[in-house]
Image 1 (cartoon, helix red, strand yellow):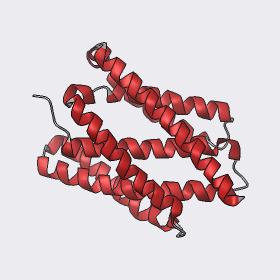
Image 2 (cartoon, rainbow, N blue to C red):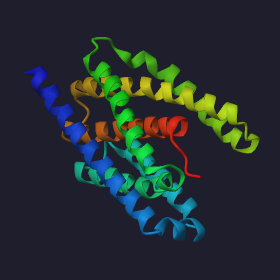
Image 3 (spheres, rainbow, N blue to C red):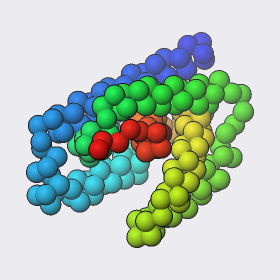
Amino acid sequence: MEEEKQGSLIARTFFWMFLGLLGTAIVAWYTYSSGLFISIIFGGYWEMLLIAEVLVVLLFSFLFRKLPPMIVGILFFVYAMLNGVTLSTIFVLFELNSIVWLFVASALLFGGMAFYGYKTSKDLSNWKTLLFGVLIVGIILSVINLWLGNSMLDVGLDWVILFVFFGITAYDMNKIKALQDDETLDQSKLHIYGAMELYLDFINIFLRVLSLFGKRKN
C-alpha cells in the first residue's frame, strides 16, 4: 500500500513537471520565433521579468504550506511561463539541433539521479549543507566572474554547478518521498511542490549542459 501511494505521488509529480516544461518550451519558442524577445530586451522589460521570476519562486517557497493547492498550482505555471520567456534567448545563441539533443541528454542524466534518489534506502538529508553551500559559493563566483570575464573559471563553475545539481536532484527526490510522512503538510499539494523542485533541478542541469556542450551560432 505504501509503495502504491509513493508511486501515485511520483507519477503526479512528474506529470506536473512535464506540463511545466512543455509550457516553458512553447512560450520560449513563441517568444523567439515571433521576435517578442527583441521587444522585451530593448524595451527595458528584461530586468522586470527576472525580478518577477524571483518573486514568484520566493512566494512559492515561503508560502507553500499556507496557500491553497489551486494558488500553488497557479504559481508553478506562472513561473514556468515566465521562465519560458527568459529561456527564449537560448534559441538566439545555440543551434536548434544542439538544443534538442542536449535536452534529451539532460533528461537522461536528470532521470538517472532522480531514480537514485527515489530508490535509495539512505536518508540523503545530510547532503543538504554541502550541496547548497557549494551552490551558493558557485553563484557568488559566477556573479564576480561577470566582471572578471575569465572563460576558464566560467567553464569550471559550469562543471561544479552541474554536479551540484546532480546531487540536488537526488536529494530533492529523496526529500519528496520522505515528505509523505509529514502530517503537518497538506498532501494534496505535495506533488506540485515536488514538480517545482524537480523542474528547477532539470532546468539548471539543462542550462549547464547546454553551456558546456552546446553548438553556438556563428
